[in-house]
Length: 86
Image 1: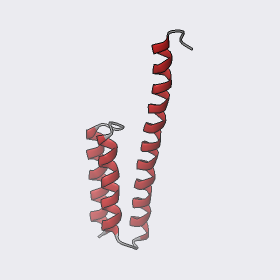
Image 2 (image 1 turned 180 degrees about the vertical axis):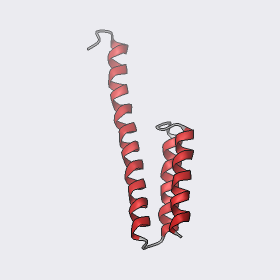
Image 3 (image 1 turned 45 degrees about the vertical axis):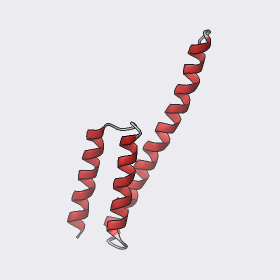
Image 4 (image 1 turned 120 degrees about the vertical axis):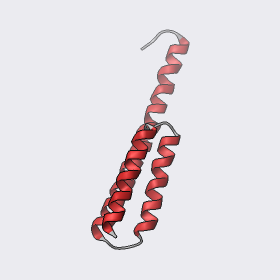
């Protein structure tokens, strides 16, 4: 544990940021799994689930949790799965 006040604060802030980033990444993975399950089941409104999934990817990229190219790759993968399901 650091002794300097500013270093102590950085430790606390980085823990909070890490927890927020982990939560955002978990939400992203959960949404992608929901989309995969919807495609596998072939039931329901796939377009709505797709739009929601793309929205979550975009928000994760905007927050800086994942790189923009990683977000583009995930959206591309989702689009391909949607096209193959139709």
